[in-house]
Amino acid sequence: MSEVEVHVLASGSKGNCTVIKKENSVILYDVGISCRRIVNGLKDLHIDMQEIEGIFISHEHSDHICGLKQILKKYDIPVYTKQHTWREIQDKLMVPKEQLIPLTKGSLTLGRLTVEAFSVSHDAADPIGINVFGGSDKVTILTDTGTVNDEILGRLDDTTLFVLEANYDPHMLKFGPYQPFLKQRVASELGHLSNEMAAQTLLMMKRPKFMQVILAHRSENNNNPVLVTRTIGQMLVDGGVKIGPEMKLQHGQPNEIISMIGGKRK
Image (cartoon, rainbow, N blue to C red; front, top):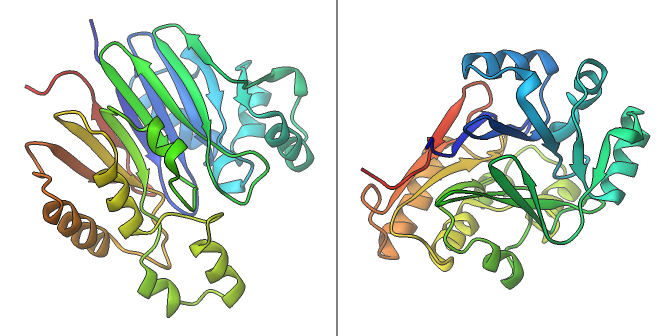
């Protein structure tokens, strides 16, 4: 039996797209890059667009949906998101409403994958994160949230493959190029997670014996890989986490596919 695979095709302020696969079951989470890039990225992974069983959209901001209109012109793939999010998407992109399957409470099974959505805190209509279950693995994608409350934290329990936002460094944000209102938005409870908040999330959650993490949605203006590694790595070590034996960390990239493969660690 094959393991769950997570492939982040793009991550960052300019576009986000993640592939989750188990055997012949494949879903996309966000399509914030061009249809061509998605098709080519899937081809590199030996996946055809015709295999995609569903597209899940976290929220309506352009770096999460900009490839959707072209995809829906070419492919008959159902789109799963919240009703309020879909209304916002239709206003922006004029996509056909018949391809929407509204997300409600409870779980949804597509082939070998079972998906559950949960609410997050972001300045969008009805933003979500997701849990995806496949065999012994649990995938969680949590980006575009300004806080991790108890309800969100409970959704992280026993995650083995985690795509987690580490968007900004507070010092870089404070002294960076953004206008004051935008700085306030990023750092608010309806904004994004800082490096420190990402580390705190990893420390607070109920972790399995071994987990893999892709640190995602890094701001190009308010963060850099060195700060992410230094800040999160030090906080994890100080919190008693053994990086390597207990947790593998990778960085999501704007133009490079980053992958995690599930299953018990060899």
